[in-house]
Image 1 (cartoon, rainbow, N blue to C red):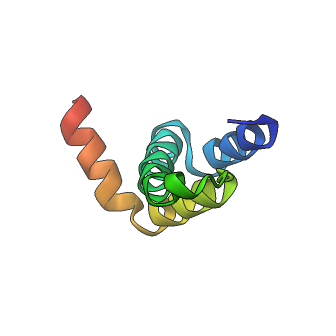
Image 2 (image 1 turned 135 degrees about the vertical axis):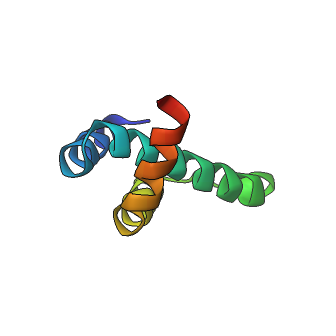
Image 3 (image 1 turned 90 degrees about the vertical axis):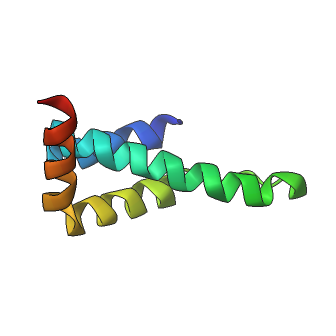
Length: 75
C-alpha cells in the first residue's frame, strides 16, 4: 500500500467503522488478488485505490449480512 492507499483506508474506516472498514479492506485485497493474477503475466502495475473503492461499495451495500457474518465468527 502506498501513501494514498493508507489515507483512503482511513477514510473507509471513518465511514464504515472499524469492523466493517477492515472487512472492506479485506474484500478489496481479495478482488485485487484476483485481478493481479489475471494481469501478472503482462507486467502491469495495478493501483489499489480502485479496489478499495469497490470494497467500500460492496461493504456499504451489504453491511447487514457482513456484520452478521462477522458477529457469528467473532462472538
